[in-house]
Image 1 (cartoon, rainbow, N blue to C red):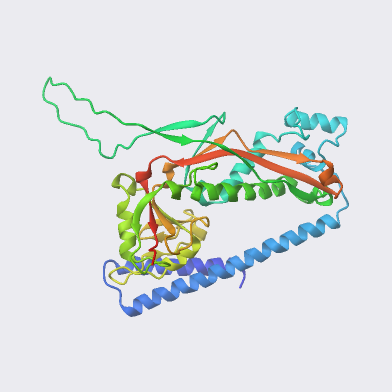
Image 2: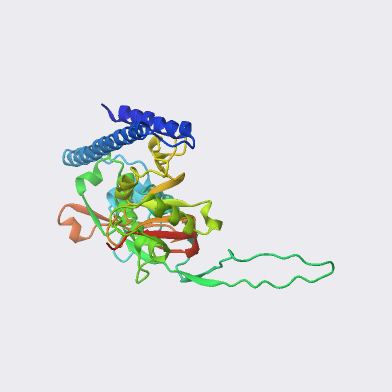
Length: 398
């Protein structure tokens, strides 16, 4: 069965599962109904595994084709735009090409040579980082023109209230207490990547997209790790590190979680933030939650369809009616692991300084090996501005 047919089958099964829950209402599910639902979700799980296997193999096949194209390249010089021209040829430009590149890109060179790519291309790195998912999918993202340390003002107004005043009476003063939350930025590097000279010269390859995706993947992995579990020591504070305890698992829940503990976790989030609350966890934890039932034997996990997109009639996976955000940097369930968080994730703020930077390197370290080097940089940081809005579930110690 092809990948499109598998996706269509998954959507069909997910809609059946959603309809079962909608049609059942508040009644207690029979064993037969629960078994029927489990069969649907089991088949969805198997299809997800098949789709992943097919896409993983497709990526491997694509890499092989790219490598082969590089080896068989005729080294053509058909170039689409100034950026591709620079990425392919670096500083080895004739006068006309140099003017073309200078007009589109910075006119200064770094200490190791090379131009800085224009903001439109650097923005592609940021877009690729968003597509990477995880924290950038749900956090609030702001951009600053400089990287100076910020002390972001935050205030907990959940206990504040107004008053009734009499006629001609003066209003009393209700002081607001502000705290300072640091939003420090750090300089991230993708590390240099080395591409064979043949690949860079091959006009069949979209060199801009190829380089951007490679660099963004590396930047996306390290920044998402820090935005999730960063310690705040020489790296950003991660959302898990700043979240406060919502529920510690009942004894025996070292690698699992029970329905009652999830209810307690959800209600540990302040009601002011609970309306926008979502769940975040590792995909391995999603697998555990798929089998959990409530007190009426109804499933609390509802599979999404249309690949989790909330468009074209699609819907994301939900847990007790709340969206599930899969983040592979969340801890896998284990003794004392903070494996699930619940809350308003937009309270986590990511600060980007200007745009990302991409450079090409032609120094001897690469040239002697018939390679061209590329590297990307990004300055960013993050922090959770209000810890009352996000709570974590911690598996039991024993």
